[in-house]
Image (cartoon, rainbow, N blue to C red; front, side, top):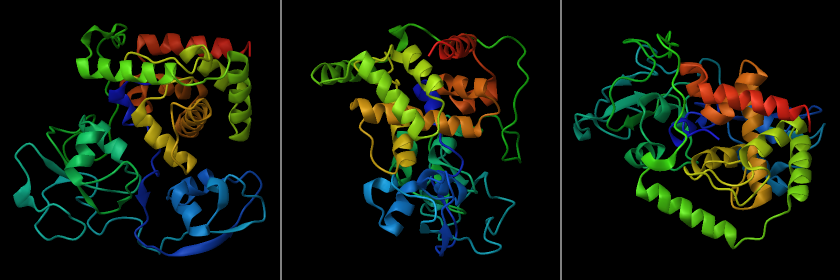
Length: 339
């Protein structure tokens, strides 16, 4: 899984942005539709669809022909009323609509970002190179919070957004002047707090019953098939990440079979429509498979999706694949041929 610095930028464009209106309309499910697909299509979260329709079992048992309520956006509400400032850092006038933080309360190191369609907490944190925890704390938000178009979000301790030019909101891919450096492979630079967290995770998993490798492989295959992911690819990612070992913990605290970072687990829980326990083998596999499916739906190629699982899609698109990422992709794709 990607490093913690990249994990914050993984979430799909729609995941936490709610439409401006709160109207709902009825649609009829087609073959292959899932609650996750509906959330993607209608710019909401699986949890909202499950709650609105009072679906049992987290919405996993929907079927073709079933009629469900989904958000309906009124005409003309797809963009904020002030497009000149939307999607860019700005000063938040005291008492302005959608602003929860008056400008007088901001420190000199803070900026205010106006949410546009497609924004997520993860994406904003990744763009401004701040931790997700600090971003949520500065705004009194939780990982499951819904952002709304036009909402103003305080970004603590930031400089210029990563990958943007002054006056624009779209990241531009820089042309590297030299090959991208390899990622660090030793834990010597990680703080004591991270090492302590890793030790706690290892102790917790050591005391937990876990499936055998044969059982784990069967679980990965079944989960991948259930969610429309190539089981050979999911098996290859799982083997490359942990050798199908649920007790595996990396030095940055990526957990379990699919080596899911806790931050990425928040996103995976949103995709699943329920809280996933990364210390549980089945939930860990589900998280990894859902992340892989989402990356495949957003990436330009299978290779980019696999690279994004390791490095983070935002980082891959901004920096290109690191040397170690290219090796990872080659290894996973070769393994997939043998599964």
